[in-house]
Amino acid sequence: MNSNSIQNRIGSAGISLTESVVAGEPVSFTITYTAGYFGIDDSGSIKICTRFATDMGRPQFTAPEQPNYVSITASNGATLEYRFDPKDNIRPWDKTIYIKIVKGFFREGDQLLVHYGDPIGGSTGIRMQTFCEETFELKVLVDAFATYQYIEVPESPALKIVPGPATKWVAQIPTMRRVNEAFRLLLKAEDRWGNSTYKTDARFRLTSNLTVNGLPQEINLSS
Image (tube, rainbow, N blue to C red):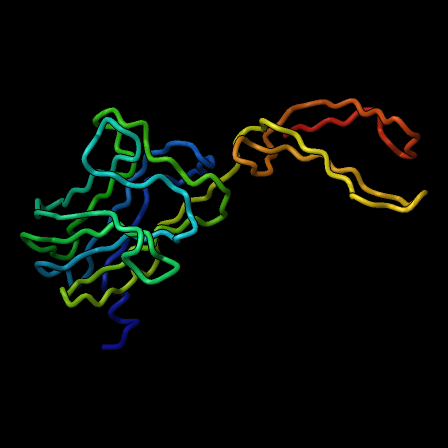
């Protein structure tokens, strides 16, 4: 059996959150892995990995009232052992939640539910990374045969991270220009993390101590 056939039978993963999330904000969502044709053998495992270049909150499993709490359950009642390790997979997918089946096994259709920012004990959620990304992927890898040979599910869950509301406005002009040489003045809105944002509604009056041809008296920035 070739590797493509194995991948197509390794199972699937979905995510409960379909709308965009705001950079740096606490969120709650669930990744659900559904076992495929092979199931998962006793002592097999699953990894959920993010890239090392993310400042998403560090998952923790012991304090449900605190931020970044993650709970993990198996639909069939299998006993699980899990941990977070920032260097437990091949770069750049270093940051890893490792989940091992220590008692029991998965049949086809059994599910693993990983609740990020689970609010059940009062957690405010898990903090999303502070920079925007069109596709923030949570790569799901499965060791179905307990051989430590991991296969990625055909399509891993992903989130779209967008900027928050504007908290700062920045003017940008060239540092040097010749006399009478044209230049551009740019105004940019930034959220609290420094991401460029369209979520703004502000009006600016512009003045200069020297004559500037083409300088508008007023600029409106609005979403």
